[in-house]
Amino acid sequence: MSAQLRQYWGCCKKMPKPIYDIGQICELDKWETFINGQPFDIFKRLREEAPIYWHEESLDFEPGFWALTKHEDIVRVSKDPMTFSSAVGGHLMSMGDPEVVDPSAVAAIIGNMIGMDPPDHQVYRKMVAPSFTPKAIRSLEIDMRAKVRELLENVEGKGEFNFVTEIAEQLPLWVLCEMMGIPESERPKIRDLVNNLTDASIQQDPNNSFQIWVNYMELFKMGRDMIEERRKNPTDDLMSVVANTKIEGSELPPELLDGFFLLMVIAGNETTRNTLTGGLMALTENPEEREKLLNEPSLISNATDEMLRWVTSVIYFRRTATKDTKIRGQNIKAGDKVVMWYGSANRDEDVFTDGHLFRVERENAKKHLAFGAGEHLCLGNRLGHMQIRVLFEELLSRYPNIHYVAEPTRIPSNFLAGISELKVNL
Image (cartoon, rainbow, N blue to C red; front, side, top):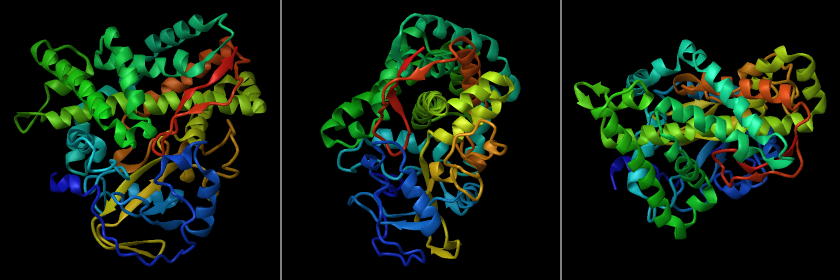
């Protein structure tokens, strides 16, 4: 295993000296802690009692880390990539047991833009940025709205149905595949592979290691086949841009291409899908807020930001300190891991008054960190926002009383706040 991969698991076992010492009150590195959703009660206690909290390792192959729960601190770390690196040590808390994890999958995850620092990050981000400009995103709205109307027509008269499979996962998958030029015949396979690769209960079970490897290989092969085809027959889609881009005269290496494809099919799907589902739950649980939207449709853009804040689909990212530094007076040593908990930041009382409440008129909803901040602000943030806005514009216009009728089935994960089933009635 390369030195770069070893950084995921190697760490100093010496216990640091936390200035906020409240003992070990949680296990944020385990998906079981998130089985019923994000532990907002734990996050609240940490914000109040230990805003920078030392979290000990709970598995031999996972390092301990500093948990950041305050909005201000997470923004600061996000905007200082020279001190808090994504590339050194990786952006995830763990890649699983190094005895069973697939090195090619780890290399692809490390090799995508989320796992890069400047200047590499800007080079590769610039490669695909033209596809995500405001003008480029606006050009998609007419076709996107038509697709939304088609999805809503398909559920008319169904009575009770799963909102996730019928609508929430369909829209972002369609948008992504249209942008990337993925044929319709391959889209169900993409959906199934992504679902398996984001389920932590599957990922962390050593008995599934071979099947996980097969899933990654299937996904990478799909991407590589498309790259090969676009190099032979270029088109105007996003995959052609990536396939035919050269950096310093050379084609992009296979692990970076794998990483790009993996990033697009997961990041391009999950935030939007989960926010659509969580947004509908919020409207069901807060009927007075739904009424405000129905009576004043112009609130929908702000309500979209409030849904993004409320749901916070991506739960965390990790950074590694490149030098000795301090946060809130706490000494952080070079090599220490720092984990940013976005769901906590998005309910930080110092930024969001009554942050535990869902309010479509919230004046500063746009301050949410659902798309991150700094160098790694999600490139597709405008696209995701537009999908959510358009879906709820059409949904509430056509089915103003849609509501969920049973508790959701959550995807076991401490990285993505996902839902696999939400039964609704029109």
